[in-house]
Image (cartoon, rainbow, N blue to C red; front, side):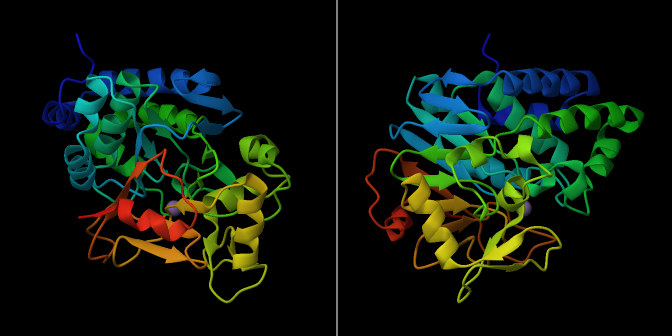
Length: 311
Ligand SMILES: [Mn+2]
């Protein structure tokens, strides 16, 4: 029997899932993530960096923060499940920040993790600052409250397993010659690609992981400035140029920042920010995601505009 039959059933399951099944699913995906290295489908995984071949399609999703409705919309509009079921080379790439703030955080986790279990080679799960290490975990972190509402006293066990999951999510995705995808921003101290791939092992002695999860681009700035968020930095266009050159790619695709239109462009078109949820506590008019032809040759990041989808 198929693990995922269709989207409507999947969301129905998410609403009614019991504690035992939720826990089984999280623990299964923790194992999957922990053992994900070397060749996985058309990707090559080194440390926690996913090197994706420029082939097929990728649906890139920014912050969801417990907004099940937006996640449903994106999966429906892109036909991801049907495409993978008939063997198309389609990827679903999450930029992190799955839970907290929205009321359906547990259900969002259920849908995302069930997709990962059913289509492990097609679904890539990255880490956001809401899935960060304990010393720099975003606050308020209300996921555990939503788990309590859904599962009662068992919710602590479910949270502990999700916590293990956080520590096994990927740091970044690199599409050769095209783009780098990660949650927050440029790790400004990174000297080699391995500083991205192994950022989690170097934390907290080096700032790479903190900067990947927390940094924001800033216009008119050279170098970096402390971030008003209390972790990470603001970084200027020269830092973006250096990082993109180091990786030999044209664009950075990231989430992390809410924006009125659901997306925004920074640093002369070299950075695309996606925010893929709508509703309280944010006030953005649209959500946005990317439906990207991975084999499209990007010369200028502005060309990514044609792949942006609004809702
Ligand atoms: Mn974030």
